[in-house]
Length: 373
Image (cartoon, rainbow, N blue to C red; front, top):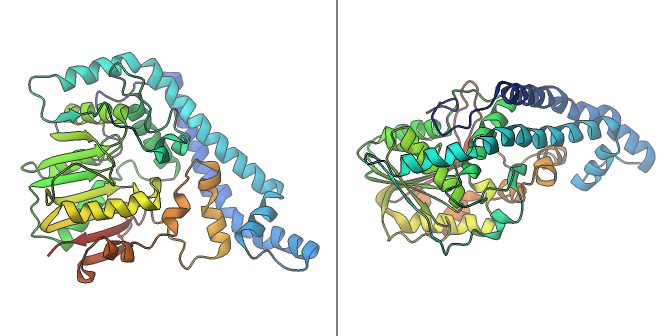
């Protein structure tokens, strides 16, 4: 199930909107492939010598490096353009989504109520999304991940899928890239005997990773959870549009209401860098509680690990914390999943933490995997 998959829940851009969105992708690619790669030479050849001339030493800490780099007009230009590109991406997508909002709501309702529907949607009217999600518009997404405009609204999911695709293309990822496919290959290689009957996708957002598990394991019962009602309405309708049986629930990944030992396979995709350290550790404990004997959990995310990196590289990677509304970006980058999985109750012999092999047009995705014997 690739990024470029088409379905009736995608917002339909006009020709002008599509052109603006295409421009944003090209603009982001130029910023990421060209100007961003020049930051280390800029620091080595211009910024550090200038700082040394003024202070008698080169900048050592991230704070010193950030102060020195922000004093340089070339870096400020790149940073401002990158922030503007992200803001304009959501404007361009929002034009399509909000113009198409009523059709999306009608289509979602038709799919959710169809007599031949395959999955289900369970929203909790008493559920309050956690402040870590509602306090900021993560990635600058309009209205945030938990936005819910009522009356069957599924704008949050429509924005998320279109925005995620454009962001990935702007980073140079392939239109055929699929995080779920990477994890499924990993599972098939490491656990060839695993034949899950119950699967849980934690922090499913728009459900783009949930659907591949329903299609890959057609005899399994697939469940998916997230905190936003608008996101889940979209995810459910999207799954139905693609003919996938997925049961969506509004829950916090750190405190679910499923019974002990309910699942054979638990997964998450690009979730850990969006949640606090406390929530992440609670999620790992929930994973251990919910796994049956013989069950496996695989939590996949971006390959962002600060251990062993230079202070300049840490400064460079921390741009998203300050400029892209990523409050837990560095919390995740500084995390150590091995001891956290041990603290969650997994046996040390049943833990695998590492990266997946990069394929053409993909990243070497990070995985934290554990299983019950």
